[in-house]
Amino acid sequence: MRIDLAGWTREATQGDPRAFFALFDAADRLGFDGVWFSEFRLPTADWPYPSPLLLAAALLARTERLRVGTAVLVLPLHQPLMLADEIAQLAFQSGGRIDIGVGRGTEPATLAALQIDAAETRGRFEHGCVTLQQHAAQVPLYIAGSTPETLGFAVARDIPLLLSLEPPEITQLGHVAELLRGRPSTLLQRSSLARYVCIGATAAQVTAQLDNLWAKLQARRNFFAAKRGVPLDQVPRIDPERMLRDQFIHGDPSQCHAQIAALQQRSGIGALRCVFNANGLLDNAQALAGMTLFANEVLPALRAPA
Image (cartoon, rainbow, N blue to C red; front, side, top):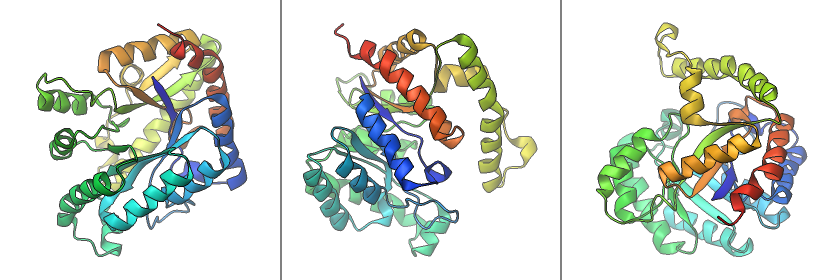
């Protein structure tokens, strides 16, 4: 199973770029397969990496084996042929270590600032996907999306999926199963899903980490609900038991290994994006400690011959 990293987005990317890049130098040495970054254009907050392709170029130049992916490029914001040229160049100069995840994107402020009609994003997204398949065919392409239309487009074009972490991918997998209708397909084997990872040497360490997270996860849920105009009393409360079941890999190394093996068998997914920093709720030192324990104790077991 391919084991990647994710979670460094928005405020989690702030700070000294040298320290930030060093985190992925460590990931390269530890043996993780790849890392994924998001695109947030014209941000209202101080997020330092609006272009994941420029960030990818910097990291690919200083690492030896780590792949770098976009999760996602918002295709309606780009001229497809120019984007295909840039992606093909990155693939060439990195020895093929770039992965491109794409999405439709619906952020109203960004669309308005760039004078893009929201009604045109579906057509621009699909045209962009076809263009990338034709003009950057050497680069692995993934689609992120949750609507039946986007999932149907991905299945029809046989493009693997970047399945979501929040909300978890259960509904998406149900749509895909219905679209495939039992037909033989390797699409899920080539797709990727995400999980928060909370790992510790002892049960007490894991419990302490989780207890520290629930209030922070609720606060973030409240924040994004408020941005959508949802009153605070209508925001669902965090259900730790459900989140641990549907969105987490957690426990000591042997428990984490068993959960990943079961997840792979249950879902048929061939790649996992591990979020060690709780999408920025934990600092980089905490994330690196988890990454190191995971790399030393879980990665070898996952890669051992069956």
